[in-house]
Image 1: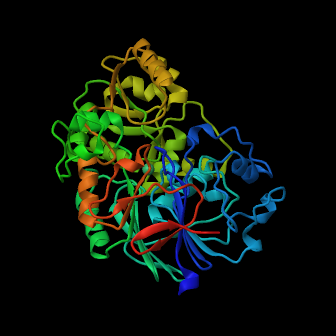
Image 2: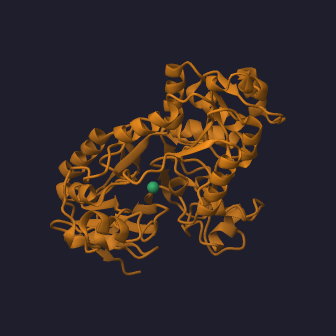
Length: 464
Ligand SMILES: [Zn+2]
């Protein structure tokens, strides 16, 4: 047993608002939890996808330097050993399809299984069909089922579903012969399915996890001062209640519904293409209003693949010789600019930021543009978007509100940790990890790339 003392190594997410990667190693068995980059995925496009792209990403710190994980043929000028030069038995687990949790999965050797939900895989494959997925060596992905353990040698990983919508969201319980680790991935007790997150909390508590990797990205000055009048984490009062003045997920969605519904003119929206819950709601509201929802081709392909349904496409001169486009065209209904201008009140129209100037061709009475959480994300581009929308004669509305956070409120996250009461809590996925305190155990901010072992209730740096 001694020789297989479990080691935990953290690579991303320790003091960053984006990115999540850590590994749990037991002898030669190894699981890697999430595989995203702390870098803004929108800004990694400057890496040329040639025979050196994996090495380039390693050199830029986008990929973590993990032995025996990448295909050796991409590592020729590196001291890092490739998959075939090590005898690790590895697997990678993806919690959900946000890029900061999975942008690097395509770089992993094809012999290492990468597990995700069936819905996440469906979306990622559809994105890759269009060249819009992760950079990849052209590998495939495996699927896990909710609450069905995946055994990787001596390590057992139990996926725990947090949300059944869209690509699905998961946390994980990881068990080795000498250790139990809980990993929340993105955590909120007031998001899509609070009851599922409570169940995850109870599982972690009942299993008495030793170590809890817990999303605390909202433990920043702004939130703590807003809710507790001070950035001092000692002032956080743990509670299972949504803070006063903030709204629940359902209330937030009723607000969004009110933006779409009851308009007299054309409704244009720019949803984030992989957020299928947003699409599902938009589909529901168009049905209720007797309107038709129309998507640009790339978004239409995702809707068609994900919901396995016929979809209305706004081609506007778009053409591609790619197989995905041919497939889409077989099951599409085409809606033209002329169709829309004849009866603008009959449509919800998707418009991506790159095509925003199309609004000038759609000028009509009572037109509304809804910034539905999609691109653009930078403040400079958002300002340009608003300006264009107004110049084209549309009113502007936005999903963004000040009374709703997607990630957990500090009081609720602290409540979650207190109930679980782990030996060690690792504040994760935020810039202030040390502010998430344990009730009886203690807080640790692990050093990047350093192995820790768990001994007598403590995580100790392993001597090399
Ligand atoms: Zn996240």
